[in-house]
Length: 458
Ligand code: HEM
Image 1: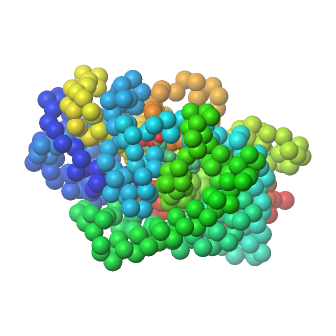
Image 2: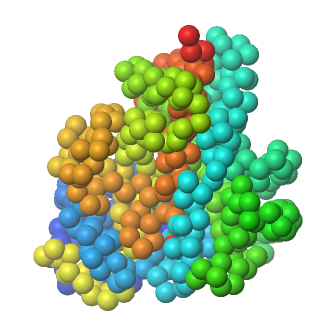
Image 3: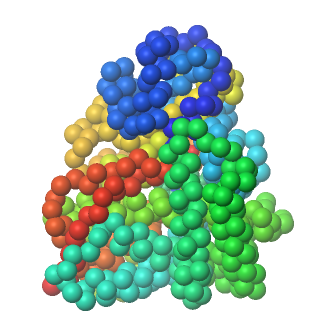
């Protein structure tokens, strides 16, 4: 979700902080490097200056924080003083006006309403829906077990199948076919904006912007028709769409407007889906690379198959730990940001109003003072015991505080159920075990194909 180019332009005022960081001239040079090669530059800066770095190019102030102790004020203790930075504003023509692009002052209880709606327990058919999607795709993988598939596209397609099925239910296939080219247009548009250092405004009638506008109008038309279709069945709440149209502000109040619902759906289909696809890829790849974890997930799948309908998310506890550890190593949203509204203190450092804070969660997750042997895949870090002792702010794949992702619990359940249902059918075998190169696009995504074959569980 982070576009460094759009982030950097937002820091506006000076403060008199003593935090470590380069001088003005070097800061300017580093800003350019940050835009060209964000993850490497962030890592280099953190290695050189530590968990708090302050850049001071010209009149702006940019803080880079990867030490959880300095995140306590902005994310928890004084969170109301830190707005979401203008990061997503430039993506509004694609994402609409939903929560993802909103700041502290225009949220109107929507965060709580959606957080409650997106709880996995509210979707009665969650596990069986995911199992059916997995079975359908695995049938294709098993047609020729020795033939390799591209794990990147397979996990992308599976996560889209699952999301569409959860949203639209039985209508899913035809809707998914008609929205896929529209989503592809929006992805291309969002990627081109996050790549560019200087963006023309999204409202300028360039052919690129016009193309996006037409695609988003078509997408809204399809989604509006689906919402109308879901309204009579809102009491059943069998699909996410039925659940959303049944929501009432403040309990028994007004239903959400169609415009609000359409914006949230756009965010879900355009950005949340891409996050899910990235996380499904990294969990599948890490699991394929670790036979002992693969065995435990396989045995959870066997127990679930024997027991039948019991609560699968509770039974697949280790699969959840695999997902959480994968999100630590490869957080799909590799950075997020905040902007200071009034002066504050971060530990000993003074931070002035208007400063921009960039939180590269990938570096937070690899901070060796919190995570021993940070590059190793060790799902046990997320066992009940280890979880209790973890410092607040050390694991941030979904952000934190009042603007934390409203789909966090649902995403974890979806990923957990997907990997355990895949393990119930078979295992991925990688053609080679080299670490995939990950590109810090709008979300963290594999930069190349990854070939793997799928063999049935014996
Ligand atoms: C692996 C999947 C996902 C990841 C990694 C992810 C990550 C994030 C992150 C990092 C944020 C920003 C949080 C912050 O600023 O503190 C966010 C916000 C948000 N996410 Fe997700 N997300 C995922 C899936 C979803 C899903 C499935 C939904 C919807 C069901 C969703 C809906 C939202 C919304 C509405 C916000 C804005 C929340 C607010 O500002 O109140 N996300 N997400």
